[in-house]
Length: 640
Image (cartoon, rainbow, N blue to C red; front, side, top):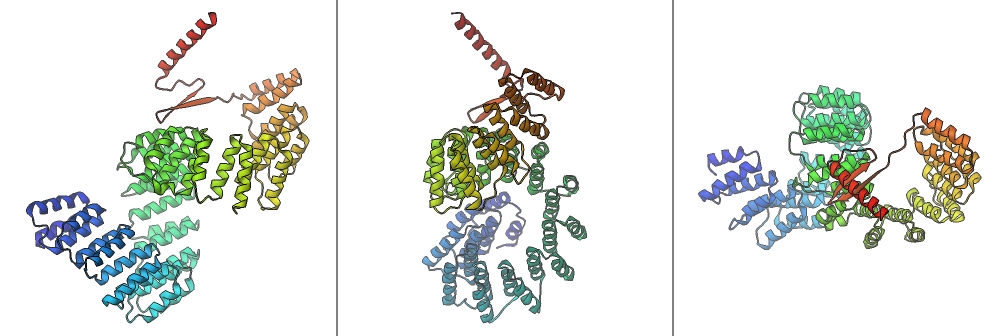
């Protein structure tokens, strides 16, 4: 490789510049003149994520040697394409190209990331055949494989049998002990080391941080001859996880140089502690930001329930927004009760040509579930969900929940039936869905099937079961299930369980028993519980208990007009007109406003929402014109 070409390749900083140089070499027909140049080009393509380009370069080489095969396999491993790297190694052997020790090392590294012990041992046995068995680089890879596969004794035996150990060998053992929760053995080995580097120190500090022993971690950190950035970041992260932001700040301020990651970790820590103002100050002071910096801020605002600030920052992002940023914003809207905004933003995402992931798909389906609309979800399912995501039980369960909330219980049950490995959440979702659709016998039958399948129920599955009993008035069965929940399965009832029991008893007129349930609750009754009693009193015209329930509700949620109206209805049913007038006067005195209703319709994956008195819709003039025409037609036909 001549000097000018070497200089050009060394100056490459991105995929575009590398492709430009590659094109020039192809035009000059000098691409195959030097194995060193080809090797360099392959490694650069892999470094910049251009795996397909690297493969095309390799396939254009007439007879690739061991070095080029090794570069290819190593590149696939570094890009986390472990199965492909093993397939390439097999192909290399089929073509009778002898591997190098570094080839073996790369393959074992890929297998260790997948904890494929048997395959790793098979490859190691090949290294013995080729004479690489005692090479430290190969044995170090095996040490890492054994530790990742939790075969600590195998690693210890190999380490003791090694003819030559280097610093990597010792560090691999220490890191392995730490990851296998053998902190005592890690420290023992650390103390035996005649020579240590920053990796040795950082691995040991990381062990103490993971165990929560920040005092010993700090002692070791202070003993380091050279505190590098990695060790500082480990300490900062440890103190943040321990809730000690002051110590984290001290370490951060003592750093000689700070990279973007250290700033990001500090900002994330302040958000975690609820200190939004300091997080904003640090973000403003950052000398340089990356996409992660902006995304951490957006995520922090969302977790603080400030979607307005999150969206403002999202719109201000200078670089191309990545999937994490989109997922954070769309998911944030869904989690904060703004599914309409989530779907609006999803419409913008469609044009971005960004590959999705499970988190993104889950956010869209959650938004559709909240609104009870399915067009956008169907688009996601048809275009984004492949076989790999369909095997994800969490995602499949969210689809069951979405279809049920959109009114398509048959589709929800169809997906449930095709799910092979059903867990508690999957069963509970279907049980609750059946109950919410009035399919009470199906809900109870599925609960019994879940018990027979050996899946232990939780509070959510009992919510669905009790709801089913409530819908059909199975009082005694409901009482029995409530008792079993506590005594047989050891589940403490929540306020929702008590609310359903109150509603169940109230449905059949057992209002005093329902009131007694409330009085014996171990926690303070909430509006959900008192609301269930008040609703039952409205049905059975019980003034005494209605007044008790309403009095509590007026304290908890004084602005909820529904409670005042329910009590007024009870008085009205008993013809107590003076009390009705008193409640209406109370509404005026407290300036209680009636809860506005809203409705929405989904057209072409776009949700259109309407509320009383709202005129913000972009087509409002046309809508009112059409409404006027409908009114005129109705008046005409009434006269006819």
